Every structure is written in structure tokens, then in C-alpha cells.
Image (cartoon, rainbow, N blue to C red):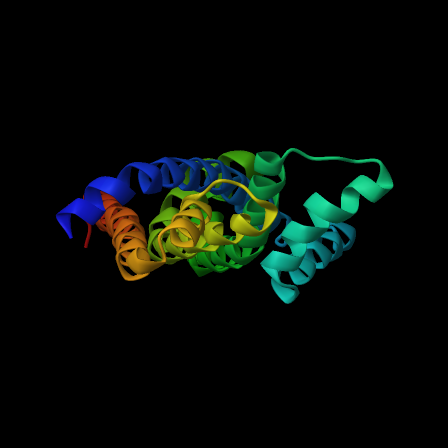
Amino acid sequence: MWDAAKELLPLLMQGAQVTLQVAFLSTIVAILASFTSGLCRLSNSPFVRRTTMVYVEIFRGTSLLVQLFWLYYCLPFMGIELPKLFAAVLAIGLNYGAYGSEIVRSAILAVPKGQREAAIALNMTPVQTMTRIIIPQAFLRMLPPFGNLLIELVKGTSLVYFITLTDLIFQATILRNNNHELTAYIFLFVLCIYFVINYAISFGIRAWERRMTAGRT
């Protein structure tokens, strides 16, 4: 097994670096999309709410793989050609951002109305109320579901293999094609790498949550 590890792990770690890069950039897009769409769904404007719902329902109601194919393989027929990494990050970020919008919306609605009324009594503007009062309280409610969503996002990056981005799965497939006798070891190492990445995320989210709740009742 140690000989197999010495032979396989260097290439698998190269793929893991691409996986982490895609996951990190997609997380940024997903967070921006989550907060933007989540807040827009609470807008007083029916047009803004309905437009946001179209985005959310399309990305939640269709397959991430189809969205990835559409951005990378279909847009060139319309004169828009996206680099592999950009297409992967955009598809994954927008897809998980659509799910994250519900986390943001529900967490904000869970903040007691008295908090808003107190902010109005203090003559705070709507922006001040949201940024200083509502979101700080809602963010603690968002952390656990956002942690789960981030773990799902990391696992979802495995689909970038289908647009030939050299991620962990792509490297594992190449190694398997060249070393059939090591197939079990290859995918055992892949499982371990994904587990380590996601366990680190889960540990970090729990530690962040404990730090934020320290001293609160």
C-alpha cells in the first residue's frame, strides 16, 4: 500500500489543488449569490422578488451537470466562450447560491420583529438596521446550514471532470486507465482526500459557531 501511495498521491494531490481552487472560488460566488438573492426575495418590489425567484427556481430545478454543460458547451454556439475554470466556478457558485438564498431568507425572517421595531425607534435607516441589527443575529442561524451547503459544494466539484478540468476525479481516472490493478487504492485515496477536506470544513464551521455563541444565552 505504501508503494502505491508513493506512486499515486503526488498526481492525486495535483488534482486536489484544482478541486480546492474550484471550491474556494465557487464558494465566493455562492455566498454573494446567496445574500443577494436572499435579500432580493425580501424586497418590497414584486418585480425584484419575482425576478429572483426565476433565478432560484431555474438553478434549483435543473441539474448542476446540465448547467455546467450549458455554460461550457452551449454558450460557444451563441458566440460566448468561457474558460473551463470560469464556467465551472460560475455554474457551481450560482447553483449552490440558489439553495443558499433560502438559508439567508429564512434566517433573516427568524429574527424577532421587535428588533426591527427597536431599530426604527432609534431612527436607523433600513440599511443600518439590516447590516447592524438583523444580519449579525441571522448569521449565527445561517452557519450550520451554510456549513452543510459548503460540504455539498465541495463534493459537487467532482462534476468538473466532465468538462475535462484536471481536478481530483480527472487525475484519478487517468491513473485508473494506466494502472487498472491499482483501481481500489486510487479511489480509496480519493475518498480519503475528500473526507479530509470536508472534515476540515465541518470542524472549522463548528469552531466558528462556538466562538460566536460564547457568552450568549
